[in-house]
Image (cartoon, rainbow, N blue to C red; front, side):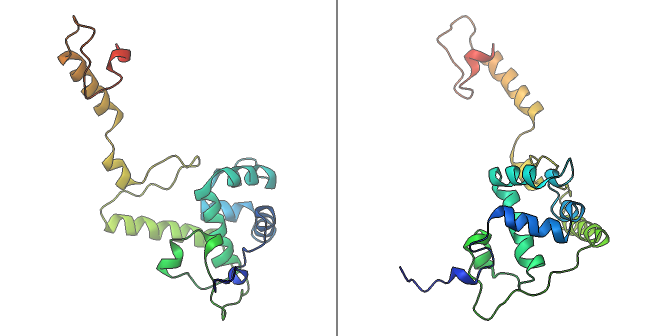
Length: 182
């Protein structure tokens, strides 16, 4: 199966997540990893085992760690937009690119990067909310697409008032769970 794709050039090819994480922690430490990636397992009782367990279950976090490994630790040039759409393990690194010396990351640089992101969000008119430690926050753009809980409660209340309560066979078509919400 030779389809002219050379994954061997990718520094992630053949490296386990544990090895990758161990190299990053040995070089940068958990404080720097948390400052740049904002992943809770690097801050609260950090250990290789607990971080590994979280990263194996969470794709977005694993991709953030793999991106840091490729572009800061291995110091490769940034991927093209087309390649960036792929997961880091599936990206093709051109033949001429070889890993360089690890970038020097500091807590001060991490703070400047966070401030820069805040400014960019402000320029676009969005509120900057860094990802919470649990990673469950949606971006400001997504928040505007979903109704707030209070709005949902108000519509349910309105819908239940419009439903004929004397007839149990009548169910509100906009709320499939209406008969269980009473």
